[in-house]
Length: 118
Image (cartoon, rainbow, N blue to C red; front, side, top):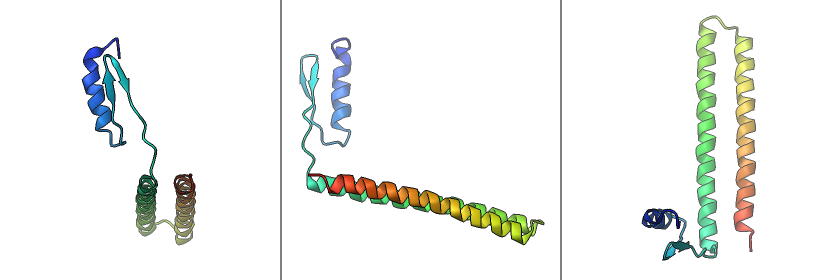
């Protein structure tokens, strides 16, 4: 920060407003940022946030799945065989399930990391 002292107030404000519970302290052209210990309440809050992000991800995947299944159904009306349409719909469902399963594993790992830490 010594090279750009005019940027210090902006940096202090950005760090303070980051929502990370940080309180930067300025000493001349140096900044000190004491990192607080993460509380159990904060870890639980992060876990709940991870769960809501997973739900948003899962819903997004299901929306894409439904969009493609509707597209396949409309192509079926335009002459696509029913067997092919069913195969495509099944494949789209399998891919969506794989991605949802991967996201669920990631959620479980993150919750384990957050909540089982001492």
